[in-house]
Length: 241
Image 1 (cartoon, rainbow, N blue to C red):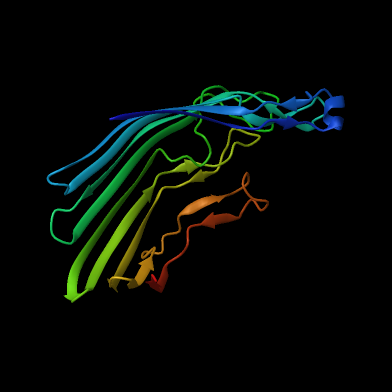
Image 2: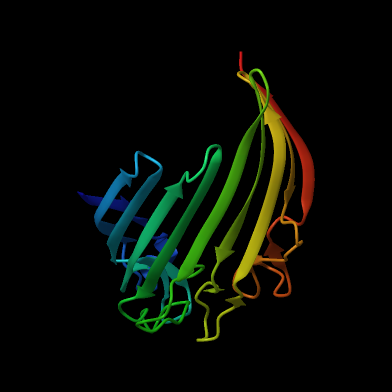
């Protein structure tokens, strides 16, 4: 069992003189996070099954954002609060010789605790999800190693990754860009020795067009989006000296 307490911050800064003349404050303060986490980790069945789990809560205060003067000029300020709370678990099993199965799952509820200020450049209500935060994400990977010759081992494996739905940046209206969930599959097969490794891989085998960011609030072109890397097939070789 373990517990962890940590904190972080971003430095504040000054506002430009023309904004101060129009009623903006002289500067903005740091925004801060306070992180709380408790968890457990261990192994069973003669080290063939291991796990690592935790629950966490992150408190984000005095969020740095852009507000508007009465004349519509933007300036740096602090306002509102947010939180990120969730749980995660990872498990690795080695049930048979040369076989490794690993999985992890994460639940994250990252939302505003307070509405963004009414004179800000973006609209956000208490309970709105933070930009690009996925409530559910996970991964499953399997690899089988098998002997080929003295000092040489073959392997074949793959992994499936899931990223849940997300929402884009806060905008000047309550409408935000939606990014659907996607699932990506990667495969590999290869050979390794004591100091070298060669493999052929195929990433994003189904050529899924998982959407990462884009739309009116994220890029200059409102119809432009950034996707995950398309299907990619290649060869890797590495050698240690």
